[in-house]
Length: 479
Image 1: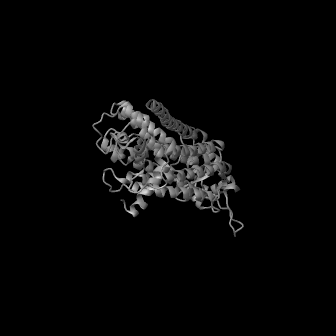
Image 2 (image 1 turned 135 degrees about the vertical axis):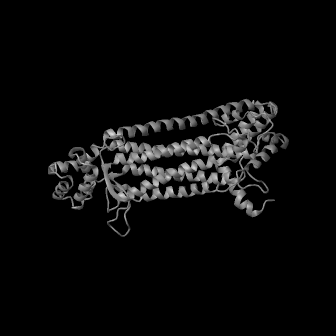
Image 3 (image 1 turned 90 degrees about the vertical axis):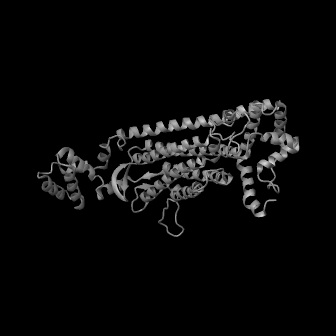
C-alpha cells in the first residue's frame, strides 16, 4: 500500500491531471497500438477484436473513479483493471504487448502539448496580424524612438510596430520549430530499448498524427527537448512582449505622452480625479510574467538531471505547462488589444522633436551631402546648435568657424530640413520608415506569416486525417 502522503501529494494530483488533460489521448494510443498489434500479426484478429469491443463498451459506459483507487499507481492501471474485469485479465494484458508506460506516457504528453502549442502559435500569429494591420492603417503616424532612455530619432508608428512584429516572427519561427520537435512519436521505444516484437513504428506514428518517430529508442524516452525547446521559444516571445509593454508605458507617461489610449482601456483613481491609468499594459505584463515564471521553472527542472527516463518529463511539468499556455495566450490577446487601440499625439511628437533636437541628425547629414564637409565637422556644428537652444545664429557661427565658409542654407531651408516629415521621407533605405523603406519590411513579415501558417495548418490537418484513419481502422477491428 502506498503511503498516504505519497498518494495525496503525487499519485492523486497525477491521476487528476490524466483525467482532465490526457484521457482522450491515451485512448487514441491504446487504439493505435492495438490496431498495430493485429496488423503485424503479434496478436490474432480474434483476440484483437475482443479487446477492441470491450474498449468500445468502456468508451460509452465507463467513467474513471473520482479518486485514484487504493494501491493503484496511475490511470493506466485503472483502465487495464476495468478492461480485465470485462474480458479477463489475460486477454486485457495482451493490449500491453510490446509497449511500456514510458513510451505511452511521453506519446500522450506530446499529443496534448502539440495541439496546445499549435493553438498558442495561432494567438502569436494573430498579434503579428494586428501589428501589420495597425501599421498599414496609419503608415504616416509619427512617433519618437528612444535609445538609452533619451529621444533619438523621429520615425513612424508603423516602423516601430513592425520592428516588434519582426521580433515576434523570429520567436514564432522558433515555436513552430519546437512544435516539430514535439510532434515526433516515441511509440515502440518501450522502456528504453524497444522490443523483440515486429512493431510497425511508422504505422503507429501515422495513426496518431505524427509525421515520424524518434529512431533511437533511448533518445525517445530520455530526451527533454520536447519540453525545453517549446519553453525556451515561449520564454523569448513573452520577454519580447514585456519589453514592448515597458516601452509603451514610458511613451504613455505624462512626462513623455506621445502615445495615447482610449477610455475603454484606461482606469481612473478612486481618489485622484486627474488620473488616467493605462492599466491594460500592466495586466499584459503581469500575465506574461506569470507564464514566464512557470516556463522558466520547467526549463530549470533539467539542470544536472541524469540523461535517463526521469519524472521531470512526467505529468507534473507537462500539466503545469498546459495550464500556463492559456495565461500566455491571454497576454498575447491583451497585446493585440493594445496594438489595436493605441494612438499617437503628433503635436507632442513635433514639439519634442524641436525641443530635443531629434531631427538634427538629418541636418548633419544634409551638411555632408550638400555642403561638402565631413560628418565629424557636421556633427560638431549641429551639436553646438542644439546646445545653444536651437539658435540659428549659433548654427551659422559654428559653421563659419569649423567649415571656414558661410552657412549655405536660409532659415526657411533649415526649418524644412528639420521637419519630422522630411526626416522620415529621406530614410528610404530598405527597412527605414519611409514608404519605400517599409515595403520590404511588410514583405518579409507577410511572407514569413504565410510560411508559418502553411506549416501549422499542415500539422493540424495531419492530426485530423490521422484521427479519421484511426477511426476507420478501429471500425474494421470491431467487426
